Length: 160
Image (cartoon, rainbow, N blue to C red; front, side, top):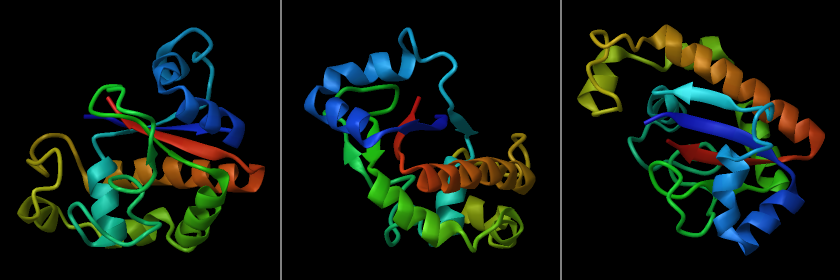
């Protein structure tokens, strides 16, 4: 399961919510090449855990990778429906993560705690996943969210 983030304008988000069948084309169809996208790899769950201290819950807006956002209908885009955050939600998220840089996030990560809490993909330290890879994915994600906030854009989150 690979976590992905893709920018979208509020107008694009409203069109997707009004016509959920368009999400597949938006994410994978012609015209999707060249669109900015951040691939979190398998680090998405560890990032969520480090931000919230919770396996599947946590408080908004830091729970955005697992629970926050509006589902785009019920169209399965890999592992369930995509979810969207409008620009106002991205601004709130950006304010919350602005003070949490990758080094700070790394301090919140412990391979033993990830294993104990059954954080995907499991096998921490044995399967090629490392705290360093999680911090790198977080750095890319954080930079994207801060840019989107400044640009007044929203976000599409999906797992494939």
